[in-house]
Image (cartoon, rainbow, N blue to C red; front, side):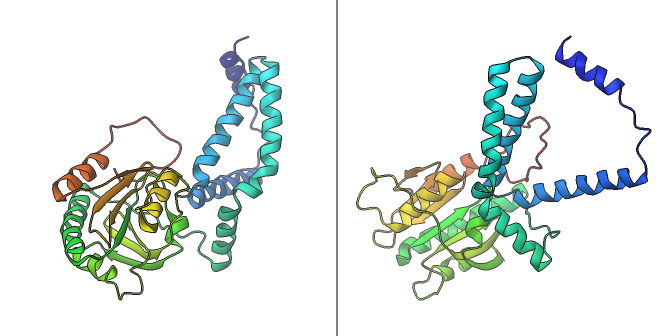
Length: 280
């Protein structure tokens, strides 16, 4: 019997008469808790890991139904090891969930969205701020979030939650400002945090002339799909980092063109179990 025939037969044989109101409430509560768990890990690196575990679980079930014994045994052993590794791999996310539970914030939504017009306004402000930063030799590190959430690094900085503007960016990176040494993280059309600490790249092939600012920009793009604008304090050179690659010596026209290309609206995709943010 084919796999799909087995599934249909199993569904047809289901008997729900044994369900009472307590079972229904139990199922609804577990469904809601599972949904809230998805919202907690959404926007963090754990989201990608959970997707990988789901793929492995589905492959294990399918291989069992298809009679692929060797593949099923291998996947089952992998999942056994994975269950032991989950507390280690998800340690930051588990800590954050417990902290939110203790603060009573576990049911608070913190996700953002933007419209094309808001992106155009934010882009105008960025392109307006960069020449001022270059002229005044203010070093700057501006991170623009895309699909991968940056909550892990937002929490290392000081909350701002102000609409992105050229004036605000210039003031943040003013040398005497207490926030000028860290990175600014932009979500949608808002500067959510400043003075953020970013992971440094470990690429040994980078030029010696690149300092901590550039290494941090490359590092965060190795961990996410974020786009980072860097203004060198020493030379005034404008660079853009994306996907672990650094593009240097950009003028206003090239910078705007690259940003518009990276944030171009995505083609419509099929249904996804995971909620998507409207940030493309």
